[in-house]
Length: 169
Image (tube, rainbow, N blue to C red; front, side, top):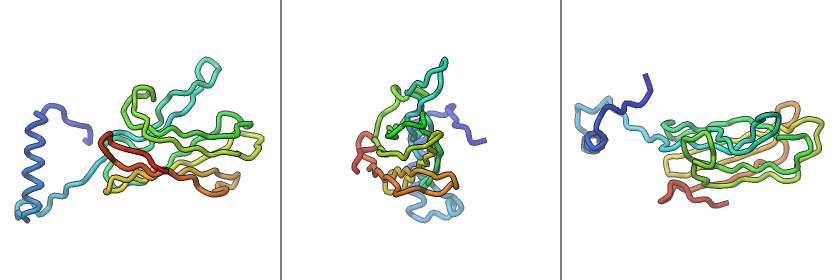
């Protein structure tokens, strides 16, 4: 079972983790088979629109990388434009656990402009790649009807900082 255990004292868990880390550094024989992994502290995802009462409404969090995912990791999700006439796709990137983006923290923005005219909604892929050095790379690209990448990928790199991530393009 991979669900979190909230029954233990957080201070004790931190102390046990520190003791295990010290034992690993010192090469303690009793810890030979133990592997410590880094995991994501928050879920990472994007703002999406959903149809509610016959109208498209923005403000919903779509998770790309769930909290607790072992690092390094790379995940790809597929999204579609809201309408065939749409000319811009804006990905607002958030960290948090709420289904409402307003309750999560905005950490970056990625935009694809000048979308080609289509008879139907445009498919777009988003890849989140999170490494052990605290970098989160977000890439997005359009997909043609054959499932192949159209044009260049758009990219944003975020660095883990005091508020978890700080953006730079």
